[in-house]
Amino acid sequence: MSRATREILQKYWGFREFKGSQENIIDTILEGRDVLALMPTGGGKSLCYQVPALATAGICVVVSPLIALIQDQVNSLRKRGIKALALVGGISFDEMNDLLDNSLYGNYKFLYLSPERLQQEIVRERIQQMDVSLLAIDEAHCISQWGNDFRPAYLNCSILRELAPDTPMIALTATATQQVARDIVDNLQMTEALVVKDSFSRENIAYKVLVVEDKRYRLKELCAQNSKSIIVYVRSRRLAEQTAQYLNKNGSNATFFHGGISQKEKKKRLEGWMENKAKIMVATNAFGMGVDKPDVGLVVHFQVPDSLENYFQESGRAGRDGNPAAAVLITNQTDESQVKNQFLSVLPDIPFIKMLYQKLNNHFQIAYGEGTDENFQFNFNAFCDTYKLNQALSYDGLRILDQNSVIALSERFSKKTTVRF
Ligand code: ADP
Ligand code: MG
Image 1 (cartoon, protein in one colour):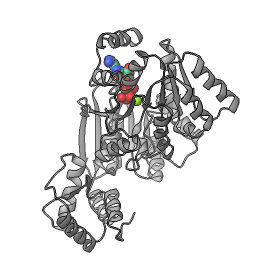
Image 2 (image 1 turned 180 degrees about the horizontal axis):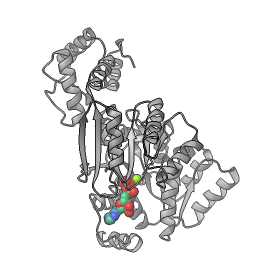
Image 3 (image 1 turned 45 degrees about the horizontal axis):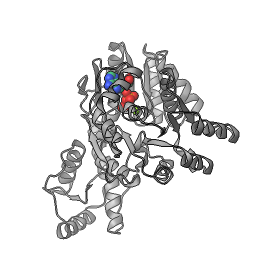
Image 4 (image 1 turned 30 degrees about the vertical axis):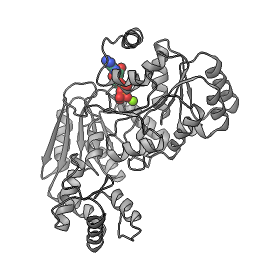
């Protein structure tokens, strides 16, 4: 098996070796088993479904969230002489009909579609008629409400199980939190799947925290010192615009991006930055998935991010090409108290927590200091600090205390809380 897949890797991509867990994943799929692949951005997830699809007869159906991502993939496959189709929004019924006929009878190896397409009867019918070799759910964290990228249409993916029964499924994501992984497994019925998690450590990124007096001044300096592409993350739309303006006034070339601008405008600004017309992108967390610029030399956080998971994803956009890059958090004294207040404002009131704590203490096993990931550790420490507790709670895998966990827990106990946003 390994030899055949290696030949495919070499023939179509010109690579000699698989990297990370690719080979293990591919072999598992070829045995007919499901896989959940948790690999960092740039880890090589695409080949995990593309290679086994090429090693088997039939067509691989791939769900992907963004037209831009779909087009990238389809173009890159076509360039290699592999037949691939894209089924995205904005085409007429007739065009869709033709496309689906093609994928049925045209010897295509890949059919990419956005999750919304799975709502259409015609799409479902045709997939049912196809000889599907593999189901691939890319960016599978979109299925989870715990993440930032929740996309309700992703819940349609489970229908693929009925449309193509007994077909192996692979779900792929760069989000590695337990909550998200559990949602993927539940929604896609992947209880028997092999779960593979590659190393998420990014050796080429230098992480720094700068505690300074004048944040803007320091930002300006940092931007001037770095000759490569830069992303600056801020937490409000207004600040994104203001900061870009400030940098432009001070000799840098910056653009901005946030959820409040039109699609057309977003596209224009993204392209300007991708093509190095603007060196600096100042953005809110709306700037994320699908942004794949290999040569970002610096990611600055001008404000403390929501969570370590988000920080990891955002700072991870630096140095995708493997070259040395930096991730810098600029902060000051005021930030610290702001973060603390913000954290406290999403907690339920103390009597409720004490009650909850008692309940859990009585009814469930309490895991002392369980959970090693940093996210939990952060919450754990803050939680214990706030409530003068010296132990952490872990209930049914739910971890106190980010705001989602609090809500989930309180719902389970059907108690009203004073969670505020
Ligand atoms: P992900 O989806 O995990 O972010 P991609 O599938 O886009 O990653 O792959 C990232 C880069 O790694 C691509 O340029 C791809 O060609 C390259 N790559 C993938 N597998 C290998 C391999 N076995 N050897 C060398 N390069 C690889
Ligand atoms: Mg990918």
